[in-house]
Image (cartoon, rainbow, N blue to C red; front, top):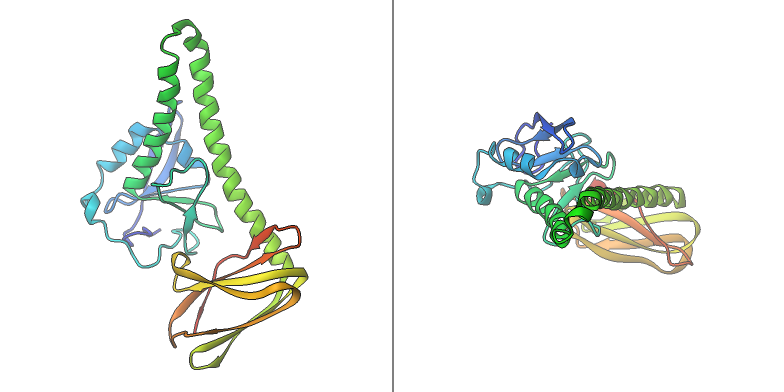
Amino acid sequence: MLCPDCNHLLQKLSVTTKEGGRFEVDHCGRCGGTWFDPYEINRIPYHEVVSLAQLTVLPLKKTPVTQKQLCPQDHQELSPLTGDAVPRSVKLLTCRKCLGIWASQKDLWQFKKHQQDVISAYDEGNKFFPNLSVVFVPAVTLLLLLITTFTTISGLQKQKEDRIMAEEIISNLSLSRIADESLGVTFETAVSVTSEIYLGISETAVVRIPVSPLPSVSHATIVRGLKKGQTYTYQIVVTDSSGKTYRSQYQTFRF
């Protein structure tokens, strides 16, 4: 398995949870990034994150980042993980296929620091009531961890459900070059929907291109300005009459 940031070989390391359990993560000893299986990022305690940082070879500010960050397991392009549990200043990446999570050394540190600060805020609020704290602080701590885990899982699950629904709605998708710099995009949908395509050189550099601004079951558009030999990433997005939006899995093609 290769590091999504610097393409260095990842190393399996065993880490200890706050409760004393153990599990393995895939860590890059070169740039400090860490790959987590689904939902395991919430299990690693802050002190283990500090220990992982001590194994990093390169200084934090000099970490090289490859043009496309790919899942170490499925080699799918990683996409940003968003949700209430992830601060805006933190960039976590997830694989839409296996639901694993990639965190750079800096972002992992900030994410776990945020979790610790939230828990500490509750501890601080309860320090004036020591007797009650003995009972409630562990419960609140557990509740916060459960909420964070649930929020993360819910976000990943929703992405997966939207992708499955999009695959059921969209059919007969065709991409064909019709000129040196133009691409024809056609597809059909099981129900009448509006549609658009997000296309670019990577998932983080896509532009929105309207396909069917009015509800329809047949969809077609021409994308211009493409470069021959360039690999592009695209995603089909459809919206039904109730306003629900479904996004297909990102795919790539070489023009």
